[in-house]
Length: 346
Ligand code: AHM
Ligand code: MG
Image (cartoon, rainbow, N blue to C red; front, side):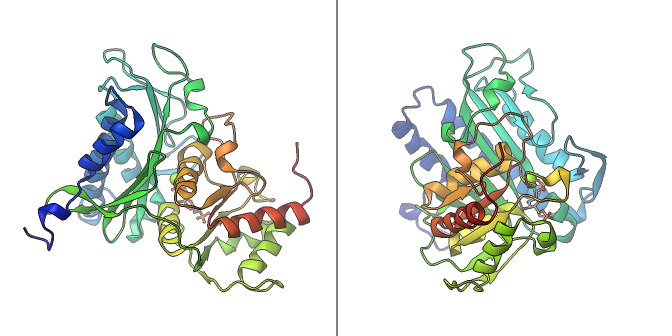
């Protein structure tokens, strides 16, 4: 067998996902097929990302999304790829994406199913033009409604209700990392075979963290509690920690590194910019799915006050402050914030 592997060692993502079917009691097979379709989307997006500089896919598409952010050409490509591969399968009630203002309906000509797929098609895409790692994040829920086209209410579910979540990272290699509530598993794309192969089974966040990740350019906008917490992460408080700072500015890449190396990623609320009063990151497409991955890997995710997974969303594009990574470090964020910022508003 080529590539230094023999057949007995190879666990394809298809085989791995199939094994989940029995654990999940997914008798219809719909959930595992959605996961497999997401993996296929990842392969298609990866093949475009790796040659982005050679084709007309870099740069802005010339429009703004619902959040008022510039849409990149690759955002549009990734967004439509995921929609097109999932609109006709009869497995989904509806979809929602960071790039679309409203719930994305399944076209009338196709049947609907019992799951809801939420996704950030190309997270960190503002970095695309500089050849920095980007990623796709996905979250899968069971619908709440019983039949027909899915509704907004089907999408607005807390992370605790997730049935699966994960991401594909387009980095020096392409990886898919996912959980269905039975641990976190990582697969590396073998480009010659065109298949994701299990490379990181049962990922656990190392107990001894190495990194903290935050955009320090926003420091002047942080609350007193966040400022003290950052001082703690930098080793300047009584209890000493010994961490290096690493910040890519691409959430999937920052999260993935800290998942494997140990650490904490922070995107706090911003006291000056009303658009970022609740941070920058989106609860449904970014924070909640990564929070499930973190918890399944032995870590924790918080908005600085409470678990991300317990937050009941009230709108599709809701933003939330995010502290995610090693449990001890995230607990410390909550302690500093409650001690120095007073009780939570509302
Ligand atoms: P995007 O989904 O529009 O790409 O925005 C989210 C990205 C994250 O990947 C990253 O963590 C964050 O924005 C970086 O923001 P900033 O440049 O303010 O540090
Ligand atoms: Mg994003």
